[in-house]
Structures are given as C-alpha cells and as structure tokens.
Amino acid sequence: MTEENKMWQCQMVNCGYIYNPKKGDKKGKIPKDTSFEDLSEDWKCPLCGAGKKAFKPV
Image (cartoon, rainbow, N blue to C red; front, side, top):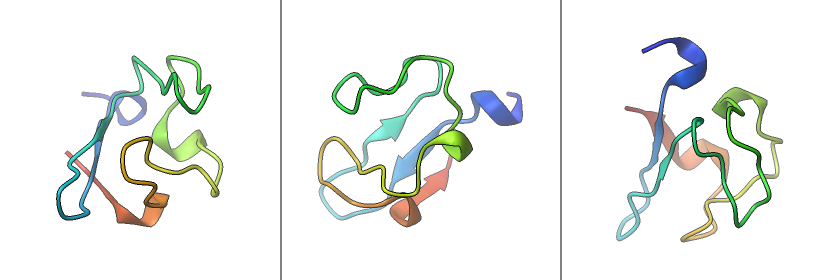
C-alpha cells in the first residue's frame, strides 16, 4: 500500500474508526483520495471526536 493510500485507525478506547483515504470522510466533508497527512490539524474523528494524534497507521 502506498503512503497516500495508507489507512489510519483511531486508538481511543471504544472507537477504532479507520480513516481510509480512498473513501475520505463524508461527515467531515473530506473528499475521497485525501491522504491522512493532508487532513487539517483540527480534523476530528467522526465517531468519537479525537484529534489526529490519536490515530496510528494500520
């Protein structure tokens, strides 16, 4: 998987949301094919509201 297609998972307890660049984030109005690194620093997990620092690559 290329760097820009890498998925990231929220590490918060009871969450586990996976950000998939191929899908984007409809709730956050992030278009598909937007890499995790290109998300703004104030982007939040659409399920639990955690910030980008709570995510790890999977």
